[in-house]
Every structure is written in structure tokens, then in C-alpha cells.
Length: 184
Ligand code: AMP
Image 1 (spheres, protein in one colour):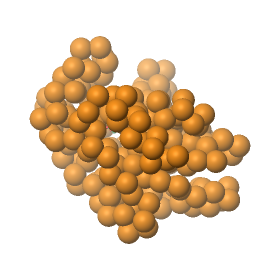
Image 2 (spheres, helix red, strand yellow):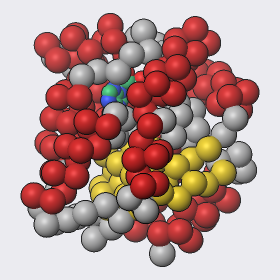
Image 3 (cartoon, helix red, strand yellow):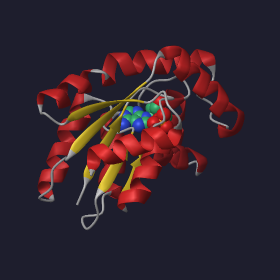
Image 4 (cartoon, helix red, strand yellow):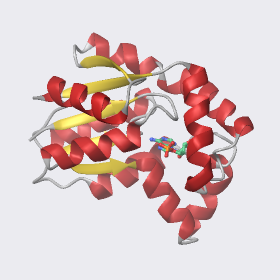
């Protein structure tokens, strides 16, 4: 049962690549960003609480993010995590959650692209995504939040010998194939 994380800055292609990988290996795809957007769309109390944070490029609390993942994990199926963990405490909670199920992480794939490419992809996506946080101003804040809070995970997983970094500048199927080769 494969357990994989796709790590990387906003706009790098985590969502698209996670879907492709989930389909190829028949894994469940857990995107905390998607789950948060569903909560907001339903106007739940949790949804209202997180909207302001998301719309200013900040992260929601570790408790909220971990709670969403705990709810979605299926003990009988492998998983690809997209946009989670985003902080060291989330990574530690994930280790505990998996250990509780007698499982562990197999690989952490870091997707890489330069800032101009990320900004261009965000602007392309903004045309169809309808996401309130796909604007140049908020995107800049999301990149800063990533550098401050999530980039430390690269060392965290590299120290554990789990990290593989992949260039995400090429066309989508080329990048997908690279990830598949690493996981096979
Ligand atoms: P994404 O769709 O992955 O780009 O996530 C969109 C937004 O949701 C992020 O900018 C954060 O505000 C929030 N978010 C998603 N995943 C997490 C997480 N694991 N921890 C904290 N905030 C998150």
C-alpha cells in the first residue's frame, strides 16, 4: 500500500500530478485545500472560520488540517497527500496517524519550479478556478507562507531519506511519468 506526499509551492502542479498518480496507482487522493474549499462552499461554521485565512494567503490551524486528513484516510487503501503536511507539526501528526494504522510513508516527492513559472501558472489557473486566492497579491503572500512554514519540510524529509525532488517545468505528462518512475 503506497503512501506518498506531493510537496511543493502553490502553482507547481501538486493537484494535477496527485490526481494522475492516484489514478495510476489506484490511491485515494487527499487534498486539504480541496476539502477546505468544500467546507467553505457549504458555509459550515468551520468554513466561515477558515475563509478569512485562506483568502489572505495564510494557513489554517494544524488542528483543522490534521482533522480533515484523519477523516479521509481509508485504512484499506494507499494514499497520495496533496498540500498536506504543510508544517512540521502536521508532519509529526501524520507520522503518528500512519503508525497507528501500522503504515509509514514510502516517498515524499518535491515538485520544483521557479517563481515566474509559478506566477504564470496561477494566472492561467485563475481564468477557470474561481479561487479567491488566485490573485497576484494573495499569491505573493502564499509563496511567502510556503517559504516560511513549508520549505522546512524539505530538510525534515530529506533527513529521513524519503525525499525525491523532481523538476516540474516540463509538460504535465512528462512530469507524471517522472513521478511514476520514482514510485515504481
Ligand atoms: P491549496 O489548494 O493546496 O493551494 O490550498 C489552498 C489554501 O488552503 C492554502 O493557501 C491554505 O490557506 C489552506 N490549506 C490547504 N492545506 C493546508 C494545510 N495542510 N495546512 C494549513 N492550511 C492549508
